[in-house]
Length: 451
Image (cartoon, rainbow, N blue to C red):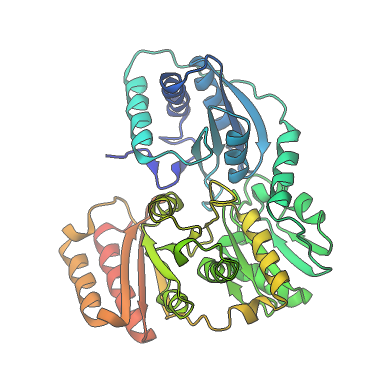
C-alpha cells in the first residue's frame, strides 16, 4: 500500500515526516539505488529544480546529498516550473528529473516530484519500489549525512532553453497588440512567464510575481482565479492567465472577466483540434470531476468523453490506452502529448491564446454554448483516510444522494491525493438538491473523521 507517494509525488509539511531531513536523504539514496539498478551507463545525472517556498533550498540540498551518496550527480536549475524539469530530463538525457514543490498547497508544505528520463511521471509500480527502498534505508544502519550537499549556481541556460521550447511549440504566436493579465501565484512562473510573454507583441500586465518564500498561492494564482478575472475587468484586458505554484496547470479569464476552468479549455482545444483533423478518434479524456455540461457540449460536437481517476498521470494513462490526443482536469492540468510529456500551464496558455487568435473570436464567444450543471465541491479536513464505505453514516448519506439524483446529477466523493482532505463533489440540475446533499455528506464525514 502506498504510504509516501500520493497522486503527485511526496507531499507534507516541510520539516515533518516524510519531509524531515532523514527521510529526504533516504529518498535521494533510494532513488539513486533504483537508477543504478536500471542504468546501462555508469554516469548517472539528475536535473533538479524547485518552486519559491522558503523550505526549497534545504530540501533540495538534503535530497542532493542522498543522491550523491548513491553515486548520482545533480545539476541544478534553480527556481523553475515543474514541466520545465520534465522537458529538460527528456531532452538532455538525464537519468531523472526532480522538482521540489507542493504545487497549489500553502507555503508551509513542500514536496518531491520525480520524472523518469523520458519526461513522464513515474508509474505507480515504480513509486512503490522506491517506497520499499526508502523504508529499507530508514530501517538500516546505513550512514545518514546531516550535512547538506551545497547546490551549485543555477544553470540559467536551462530556463532560456525551456522558454524557446515553448515558443517553438506554438510557431507564429503573437498577442496581436492585445493586453493580457498574467498571475504568477508568486510561484515558479514568476521566473519564467515574464520572459516568455515579453517575447510576444502586446501589453503584458504581470501580477503576483514577487515571491518571498511564504506568499506562494496566497490569495492569488489558480486557487483564486477570481483575482485575475477582476484584474481583467479593471484593466479592460483581452484575457487573463493564472497559474498554480509550480505552473503545471493554468486557469483563465475571458474578456468579460468570467473565469474559464479546465473543462472549458478542453472544449475549446478539442473543437480546434477536431476542425484541423488532429483530434485522434474524436476522443477527449477528462476525470470524474468534469462537469456533465462539458460532456453534453462534447456530444453536440460529435466528441466522445472518457473519464479517468483524478490525477493528470491517470488521465495520461487513459490517453495512452485510448489513443486520445487531448485530456485534462477541471483544475487546469491539460495534456497535449504531441507537444509535451506532462501538463504545462504556460504551454496551455500559449495554445489557448493561439486558438483565440486564429478563430477571430473572443474567448467568451468560443465558449458561449457551454452550460454547466450546478456543481459544488466541499473540502473536509480529516485526521485519517478511513474507507468511506466502511462508515455507516457517510455511506447512508452518499446512498441517499445517489438515489435522488440518479440521471439528473452525479456524486463523487474521494480523498485528496495531496492533502488531508475529503472532497465532496455534487452535481445536479437543482441547486437546492446539490447543496443539501453536499452539506449532508460533508457533515457526516466531518462528524466521523473531522480534525
